[in-house]
Image 1 (cartoon, helix red, strand yellow):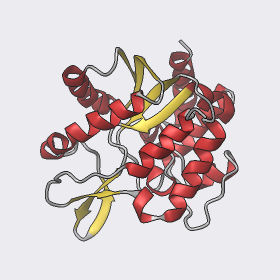
Image 2 (cartoon, rainbow, N blue to C red; image 1 turned 30 degrees about the vertical axis):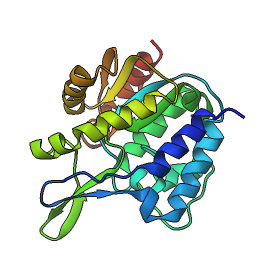
Image 3 (cartoon, rainbow, N blue to C red; image 1 turned 180 degrees about the vertical axis):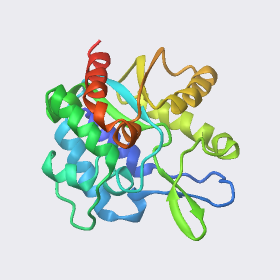
Image 4 (tube, one colour; image 1 turned 180 degrees about the horizontal axis):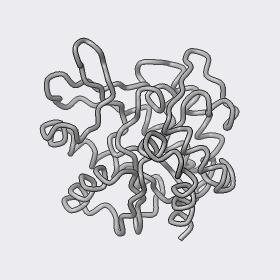
Length: 228
Protein backbone atom coordinates (compact mmCIF):
# COMPACT_ATOMS: atom_id res chain seq x y z
CA UNK A 1 0.00 0.00 0.00
CA UNK A 2 1.28 3.46 -0.91
CA UNK A 3 2.29 5.81 1.87
CA UNK A 4 -0.15 8.67 2.28
CA UNK A 5 0.86 12.31 2.69
CA UNK A 6 -0.03 11.92 6.38
CA UNK A 7 2.15 8.81 6.78
CA UNK A 8 5.11 10.80 5.44
CA UNK A 9 4.49 13.66 7.88
CA UNK A 10 4.26 11.28 10.85
CA UNK A 11 7.50 9.50 9.82
CA UNK A 12 9.24 12.87 9.40
CA UNK A 13 8.13 14.08 12.84
CA UNK A 14 9.13 10.78 14.47
CA UNK A 15 12.74 11.12 13.27
CA UNK A 16 13.07 14.87 13.98
CA UNK A 17 16.09 15.55 16.14
CA UNK A 18 18.31 18.62 16.22
CA UNK A 19 21.85 17.60 17.18
CA UNK A 20 23.66 20.70 15.92
CA UNK A 21 25.23 23.45 17.93
CA UNK A 22 23.34 26.29 19.61
CA UNK A 23 24.59 29.62 20.97
CA UNK A 24 24.81 29.93 24.79
CA UNK A 25 21.41 30.35 26.45
CA UNK A 26 19.36 28.71 23.68
CA UNK A 27 17.71 25.30 23.79
CA UNK A 28 15.61 23.26 21.35
CA UNK A 29 12.39 21.66 22.61
CA UNK A 30 11.36 18.45 20.82
CA UNK A 31 7.75 17.55 21.73
CA UNK A 32 7.94 14.27 19.81
CA UNK A 33 10.65 13.03 22.18
CA UNK A 34 9.48 14.80 25.36
CA UNK A 35 5.84 13.67 25.54
CA UNK A 36 4.63 10.27 24.25
CA UNK A 37 1.06 11.60 23.86
CA UNK A 38 2.26 14.24 21.38
CA UNK A 39 3.12 11.47 18.91
CA UNK A 40 -0.32 9.89 19.47
CA UNK A 41 -2.43 13.04 18.88
CA UNK A 42 -0.19 14.24 16.03
CA UNK A 43 -0.67 10.89 14.25
CA UNK A 44 -4.46 11.07 14.77
CA UNK A 45 -4.47 14.53 13.19
CA UNK A 46 -2.51 13.55 10.07
CA UNK A 47 -4.41 10.27 9.70
CA UNK A 48 -7.64 12.26 9.79
CA UNK A 49 -6.84 15.14 7.42
CA UNK A 50 -3.95 13.89 5.26
CA UNK A 51 -5.03 10.32 4.47
CA UNK A 52 -4.42 10.74 0.71
CA UNK A 53 -1.73 11.62 -1.82
CA UNK A 54 -2.96 15.05 -2.90
CA UNK A 55 -0.45 17.77 -3.72
CA UNK A 56 -0.68 20.61 -1.23
CA UNK A 57 0.47 24.20 -0.97
CA UNK A 58 3.02 25.00 1.74
CA UNK A 59 2.47 27.63 4.47
CA UNK A 60 5.69 28.25 6.41
CA UNK A 61 5.96 29.64 9.93
CA UNK A 62 9.05 30.53 11.99
CA UNK A 63 9.41 27.82 14.65
CA UNK A 64 6.70 26.34 16.93
CA UNK A 65 5.57 28.20 20.04
CA UNK A 66 5.81 26.51 23.44
CA UNK A 67 2.00 26.45 23.77
CA UNK A 68 1.11 25.35 20.24
CA UNK A 69 2.95 22.75 18.17
CA UNK A 70 5.53 22.30 20.93
CA UNK A 71 2.72 20.57 22.85
CA UNK A 72 0.37 19.12 20.22
CA UNK A 73 2.91 18.43 17.46
CA UNK A 74 0.47 20.12 15.04
CA UNK A 75 1.57 23.55 13.74
CA UNK A 76 -0.52 26.54 14.89
CA UNK A 77 -2.81 24.20 16.81
CA UNK A 78 -3.15 24.39 20.59
CA UNK A 79 -4.91 21.67 22.59
CA UNK A 80 -8.10 23.76 22.76
CA UNK A 81 -8.57 23.91 18.97
CA UNK A 82 -7.24 20.38 18.52
CA UNK A 83 -10.15 19.16 20.64
CA UNK A 84 -12.92 21.67 19.82
CA UNK A 85 -12.34 21.95 16.06
CA UNK A 86 -10.47 18.77 15.10
CA UNK A 87 -12.14 16.42 17.60
CA UNK A 88 -8.84 15.12 19.01
CA UNK A 89 -8.47 15.33 22.79
CA UNK A 90 -5.10 15.60 24.52
CA UNK A 91 -5.11 14.38 28.11
CA UNK A 92 -1.60 15.21 29.34
CA UNK A 93 -1.62 18.93 28.51
CA UNK A 94 -3.86 21.95 28.05
CA UNK A 95 -2.77 24.95 26.02
CA UNK A 96 -4.05 28.18 24.55
CA UNK A 97 -1.95 29.92 21.91
CA UNK A 98 -2.87 33.27 20.35
CA UNK A 99 -1.62 32.32 16.87
CA UNK A 100 -3.87 29.26 16.91
CA UNK A 101 -6.92 31.47 17.54
CA UNK A 102 -6.34 33.46 14.34
CA UNK A 103 -5.42 30.45 12.20
CA UNK A 104 -8.58 28.55 13.12
CA UNK A 105 -10.82 31.60 12.61
CA UNK A 106 -9.28 31.94 9.15
CA UNK A 107 -9.72 28.20 8.45
CA UNK A 108 -13.40 28.42 9.45
CA UNK A 109 -13.97 31.22 6.93
CA UNK A 110 -11.99 29.33 4.29
CA UNK A 111 -14.52 26.52 4.51
CA UNK A 112 -13.49 24.42 7.51
CA UNK A 113 -10.68 22.08 8.50
CA UNK A 114 -11.42 19.30 5.98
CA UNK A 115 -11.36 21.67 3.02
CA UNK A 116 -8.37 23.67 4.26
CA UNK A 117 -6.09 20.75 5.14
CA UNK A 118 -6.99 19.05 1.88
CA UNK A 119 -5.29 21.95 0.09
CA UNK A 120 -2.64 23.21 2.51
CA UNK A 121 0.14 21.89 4.70
CA UNK A 122 1.52 24.12 7.47
CA UNK A 123 4.83 23.78 9.23
CA UNK A 124 7.71 25.97 10.35
CA UNK A 125 11.04 26.43 8.62
CA UNK A 126 12.66 25.28 11.90
CA UNK A 127 10.15 22.58 12.89
CA UNK A 128 11.04 22.34 16.59
CA UNK A 129 10.53 24.91 19.36
CA UNK A 130 13.41 27.17 20.41
CA UNK A 131 13.61 28.70 23.87
CA UNK A 132 16.02 31.14 25.47
CA UNK A 133 17.03 31.41 29.12
CA UNK A 134 16.18 34.89 30.42
CA UNK A 135 17.11 35.25 34.09
CA UNK A 136 16.33 31.61 34.79
CA UNK A 137 13.05 31.63 32.87
CA UNK A 138 12.62 29.85 29.51
CA UNK A 139 10.93 32.04 26.91
CA UNK A 140 10.01 31.53 23.24
CA UNK A 141 12.76 32.44 20.79
CA UNK A 142 12.89 32.66 17.00
CA UNK A 143 15.58 31.04 14.86
CA UNK A 144 16.54 34.49 13.52
CA UNK A 145 16.86 36.24 16.91
CA UNK A 146 20.61 35.70 16.95
CA UNK A 147 22.87 35.67 13.83
CA UNK A 148 24.83 32.75 15.29
CA UNK A 149 21.61 30.79 15.90
CA UNK A 150 20.58 31.25 12.26
CA UNK A 151 23.94 30.17 10.87
CA UNK A 152 24.05 27.13 13.18
CA UNK A 153 20.55 25.97 12.22
CA UNK A 154 20.48 26.89 8.50
CA UNK A 155 21.66 23.51 7.15
CA UNK A 156 19.15 21.68 9.35
CA UNK A 157 16.33 23.93 8.08
CA UNK A 158 17.24 23.33 4.43
CA UNK A 159 17.37 19.56 5.03
CA UNK A 160 13.95 19.64 6.78
CA UNK A 161 12.30 21.67 4.01
CA UNK A 162 13.67 19.36 1.31
CA UNK A 163 12.29 16.31 3.13
CA UNK A 164 8.87 17.96 3.41
CA UNK A 165 8.79 18.96 -0.25
CA UNK A 166 9.02 15.22 -0.99
CA UNK A 167 5.68 14.66 0.81
CA UNK A 168 4.03 16.18 -2.26
CA UNK A 169 4.28 19.95 -1.88
CA UNK A 170 3.72 22.46 -4.65
CA UNK A 171 6.95 24.49 -4.75
CA UNK A 172 5.84 26.99 -7.43
CA UNK A 173 4.56 29.30 -4.68
CA UNK A 174 5.17 29.26 -0.94
CA UNK A 175 3.23 31.25 1.68
CA UNK A 176 5.47 32.71 4.38
CA UNK A 177 4.15 33.88 7.73
CA UNK A 178 5.90 37.06 8.87
CA UNK A 179 8.02 39.61 6.97
CA UNK A 180 11.19 38.95 8.98
CA UNK A 181 10.74 35.22 8.50
CA UNK A 182 10.45 35.89 4.76
CA UNK A 183 13.76 37.79 4.74
CA UNK A 184 15.58 34.78 6.15
CA UNK A 185 13.71 32.23 4.03
CA UNK A 186 14.73 34.28 0.98
CA UNK A 187 18.39 33.83 2.05
CA UNK A 188 17.84 30.09 2.43
CA UNK A 189 16.00 29.93 -0.90
CA UNK A 190 18.80 31.77 -2.69
CA UNK A 191 21.24 29.17 -1.43
CA UNK A 192 19.10 26.02 -1.81
CA UNK A 193 16.63 26.94 -4.59
CA UNK A 194 13.60 25.43 -2.85
CA UNK A 195 10.68 27.60 -3.97
CA UNK A 196 9.46 29.79 -6.81
CA UNK A 197 7.23 32.72 -5.84
CA UNK A 198 7.24 33.76 -2.17
CA UNK A 199 3.99 35.28 -0.91
CA UNK A 200 4.21 36.98 2.48
CA UNK A 201 1.34 36.98 4.96
CA UNK A 202 1.25 38.77 8.30
CA UNK A 203 2.10 36.42 11.13
CA UNK A 204 -0.97 35.26 13.10
CA UNK A 205 0.62 36.34 16.39
CA UNK A 206 1.20 39.86 15.03
CA UNK A 207 -2.45 40.13 13.95
CA UNK A 208 -3.76 38.82 17.28
CA UNK A 209 -1.50 41.06 19.39
CA UNK A 210 -1.46 44.32 17.44
CA UNK A 211 -4.24 44.31 14.83
CA UNK A 212 -7.20 42.69 16.59
CA UNK A 213 -9.62 45.41 15.49
CA UNK A 214 -8.63 44.81 11.86
CA UNK A 215 -8.59 41.01 12.16
CA UNK A 216 -11.25 40.55 9.48
CA UNK A 217 -9.11 42.48 7.00
CA UNK A 218 -6.25 40.01 7.54
CA UNK A 219 -8.51 36.94 7.40
CA UNK A 220 -9.88 38.23 4.06
CA UNK A 221 -6.33 38.88 2.84
CA UNK A 222 -5.22 35.35 3.75
CA UNK A 223 -8.17 33.76 1.96
CA UNK A 224 -7.75 35.97 -1.11
CA UNK A 225 -4.05 35.15 -1.48
CA UNK A 226 -4.41 31.47 -0.63
CA UNK A 227 -7.15 31.12 -3.26
CA UNK A 228 -5.19 32.74 -6.08
